[in-house]
Image (tube, rainbow, N blue to C red):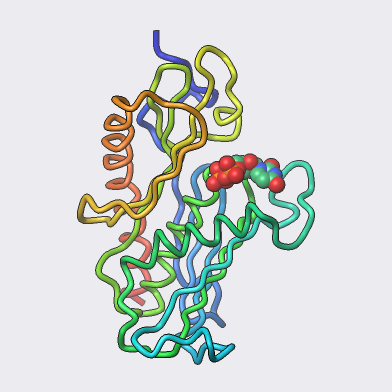
Length: 232
Ligand code: UDP
């Protein structure tokens, strides 16, 4: 029998999504994206000259992402400032987004993306990637595609999409497996795959299929939000 999800969703159902662009007027591009109680905000600054100079690449501009959870975003107040976790997520966010950006026209420059999670209920890196992708598009940077991201996984024996924190902590049966993914919106090219937990190799295909379907819904939400600003 299939697992009953803690919030009553079906196995393939995402949490309600909200997306809006242009939420930080001082930034060159900005967006907010939420999966249920997980809310991430992203701001883009640049392209601008990269300092220190030895990090510059004369062949292309580079993307630099900074991710963090704000102290009040979790129930047990999080210590402010960077951590190993935030450094890892900043790096994988950069890797997830970079393939969609074409910064060859900006040699020696950097595009800074700051991502802050203002409320966390699991899936913060994926919400952050969705917000950042929209913010980069809002900044008018040359992009091959939008990037869509979702954490899929396994609860006991069931493949599910968009795990919340209670589900990530699920301990019964085979327990929980968290499998965050990101992909190009309009092709099957994946730019992020991480795995926390265990999964049978033959079931990975099911996760990828579930993520692909979920990303179609995420893309629609991102597109709708971007079209809203074009209208004004
Ligand atoms: N979390 C927390 N305190 C922390 C770090 C994480 O309460 O210092 C919670 C938060 O809800 C987060 C979840 O644990 O969303 C899962 O974190 P994980 O590192 O798996 O990344 P995420 O699923 O957020 O991308």
